[in-house]
Every structure is written in structure tokens, then in C-alpha cells.
Length: 273
Image (cartoon, rainbow, N blue to C red):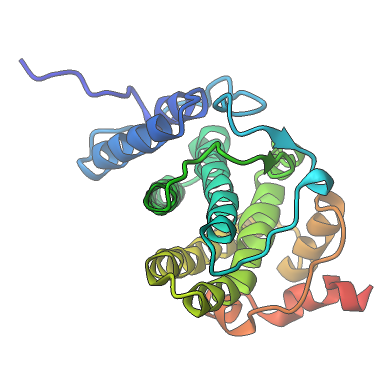
């Protein structure tokens, strides 16, 4: 007799990840779900009772963003650990953000939406694993340093609207990663940490794909809803759901390769305020 699959549905897998506190368990469950989906053994399922916030480990201590110490990358181990720890925290949140999108919205979209966002979840899990590995190589671990607690605000702000979620999470937050990651890669190479730079290269490449996915499904849903000109609709949603202006400088080339051109985001930039 064949063993029962580990998850009854994709949305059940989403709930399992969101309620798992241990980051390594989130990675493990994500890998299992991706394998089941690839084998064609995972239906999408119905929308579960999605928690307002995902489960988290006891450490790190979560602080308001304005209470976080400033990061400074130096040749010493401490500066690199501080940077990599902050990035690991972002990637842990990114795992949960991808699964939260799947849990809340995948049943209302074509199957390609679930396939795309499961790919995002799987890649974010591998990003966290990469960064956790680099921290371990430097004698540290996720949880050793405080982290800021502002990353889940966008999810809570857009929990009831798929179009707003797509506008803010991939097209603002992940697009910001395209702007800053090349600078971090260059600084890591300056301090001769090639292994960490290589990990960030993987993350940077994948994040272009994530912004592409967000852009594609934003355009699809905007057309389905008949909201009018998509660029104006996106700008209105960002003004409504994202606090503050967008911060230049922008990586226009990487954003354009994701189908996201400057006429969308430049009017919301800090220098245009």
C-alpha cells in the first residue's frame, strides 16, 4: 500500500509552513511540498484559516526598525555576520510571504499562479538555507542577533486584497532587493568573502524572477478586475498600502528585465516627493 502524501493540498502545506516556528522546519516542509507539486500529487485546496502572523522561533529578539543598530561591513567577521543575519531574517520572512500568498489567494487564480508562487517559496527557502550555511561557516547562527519586526506589516496591510499584495510585496519589497543586492555583493568581494558574495549572486538572480512573477500576475488580475490603466492602479495601491516614498537609486536594468520600467516607480520616488 502506498504511503499517504505528506500534505492533503497546497494550502494545507502553506498552513503547515506558516505555523512551524523553526526556520529549518519551514525549509524542510517547503522542499517536501515542492517535490509533491512537481510529482503532480498536490491539489491546490481551499483557503485555510490563515494566521495573522507566522510562527517564529524564540530568537532572534524582534525590535522596531528604528531601534536596530546600524550595519557596517568590514573585513572582520562581525560585520559580515551582521549583514548575513539581517539578510537571513529577510529571507525567512520571504518564505512565509510566499506561502501566505498561496494560502490566501491561490484558490482564486489559475493553476499557474500556484506553480509560480510555490517556485518563489522554494527559492526563498533555499536562500535562507544558503545564508544559514554562511553564518555557520563564520561561527554564527540565525537568532544570534536582534532583527527588526517591520517586515510583516506589508502582509497584514494587504491580507484582504490580492492586487494590493502583488503591488507591494514583489513589486516594491522584492524590487528593492534588486537595487541593493549588487552593492552588497561588491562590498563582500572587497572584504574577500567570495562564498557569501556567491550566495548573494544566487539570491539576486532568483529575485529578478520573483519580481517578474509579481508583475505578471498583477497585470493579469488588473485586467480581470478592469481597474483601468495598470500603472496608475499600481501607483494608487502603493500610495495606499506602503508607508513612505520609494528609495532611489534604482537598478533600472534589473527592474526592466523583470518587466518593470521606470515610468511605474519613478513618480513615487523620494526625489519626486
